[in-house]
Length: 508
Image 1 (tube, rainbow, N blue to C red):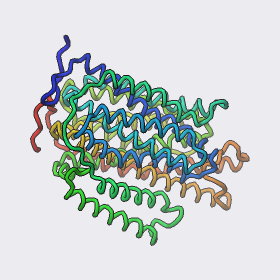
Image 2: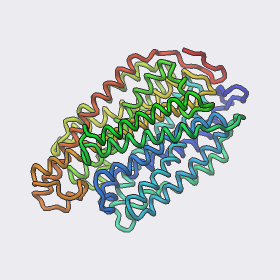
Image 3: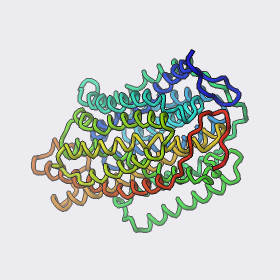
Image 4: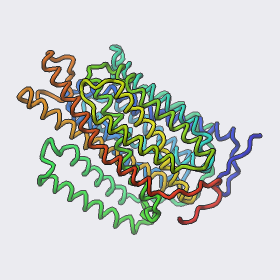
């Protein structure tokens, strides 16, 4: 029999075969979550145009899911430390499926955004719980052994998603609504597989959820998102609405901290931030989240609205970033498992992300594709190396009973960074496009997301040029954040990876 892998205290070690069986259902859940986010990327310009909406709705269709994913992840993580992880991940799949169906049935932009909130709550459970469960089954030093499987799943989900979404939109008898329906069968299969293969010890304890902290956290994040979405469009960045919204965000944040200090089961444990590695990883995750979600969102939009490509072709053109991310994730995991060293890879990943964003900062309407492909490859390699291994660095610093809170906290800040980044950069994009169209055409005609292909040739050229220049500008804004991530990674102290999950890690 294959040698067993260490399990949490009180549980029999799982064999290699048992781990692979459990991972089959977990990775199918990951595939569902990845597919849901990537399949809609190339379809969004068509969706928003069909709903007669503008850039702000384009942004909110994305950020509504990211926001609900962000604020729900810590709650899922806290529950994972108290009750059955198997039951929780199945609940996440059900909520996600309901949100997907409602999204596909939406008749207007408001209903679509609301349905995407439901979808995001389920996705928050999937993304947080899968990482917690894997970390529970497999000690940090052994994780790289199984990263190849994750890389394969990630490659299929991320590369197939945009292509499937593009094909669905380009197929008249399907339509964009099937971008939301397509993940439902996979979610159902994942439910069945998890029921048969996932068997983990149930932690006994009373379930205490910090609802006050969750509500304050949601309100603070929502107010901040409203500000970054509307600033520069509905009002100036330096104005009284900005002061009101930022002041309200600050007050809600202070109230949240006060509540968390007294809560019996805080949704975001403040004691985690006594560890330097956790603080630095959280800050780096905020910055990396911007690069991850902004690149996935706005590169695809650039290909369609600046270069006039079809949704299907936009998915094909984005493959360098997608495939390099999957490759780097797999290779980095195996290197860490073989050597036990992880910090050099984190530094390399941060450097590659910074270089990729800097190259994308030169984007214009007529930028050669080879330069865009080089930039996307560099960005994808950096993200593949950095994303999971920042979580690994934190998981290695906390005891097994704290894995849920620690893992979901890092995921929370990464998604929060992506949510704020997509909203802020979307506002920058909309403002840049509007100013460009006003200068060239005398007014910012129609929605920024009107289909350029349907416009008269002279107007189309102006619109495409506006999107090209604005895309380069927003990535220039993202470069300083990547430098912040690099500095944080440089100051993280490398600690040898634990070889078991049975012994709690002491404070470091």
